[in-house]
Image (cartoon, rainbow, N blue to C red; front, side, top):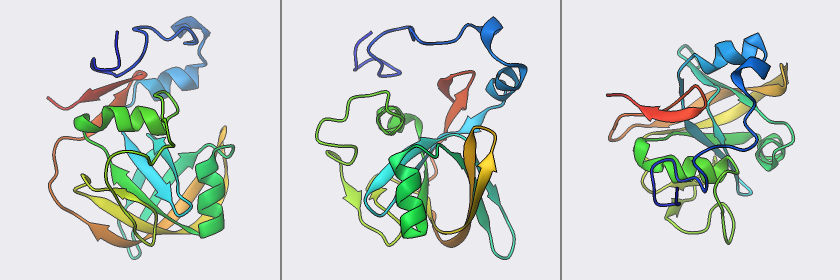
Length: 174
């Protein structure tokens, strides 16, 4: 498989993938729940692909996400106190892989492609929808940190079908 093929990975299989029988029951359950693929960015700039994202409507609206506390993004969002959340589309598979650390990023994560600087972090020029959030709290949750952000601004534009993460792979709605 080449970088130009769907999935954009170097190899057709992951040599580090844990066999199904070696995964915990909780991990196997999580893999059976479809999740939206989002890009979270913060001033710095820093960014991370996140599939553990939940939006809670209310006054105020909130975004919740499970974030790796060893990531550069985690340090940047805690320092800045704000972040952007961008839902990704099937056209963004390579972008998702790049910010997940699965695809090469010569020149850095934000090199190449167009980016719009916002008070919450860089947003891809191609993003039709994104939210700007203020970090309200963080706490340990499983192997990650649960970030709770108050939504301060929402930009809705075109809404192509979302990129979905299901059973360790990207898929899209039919």
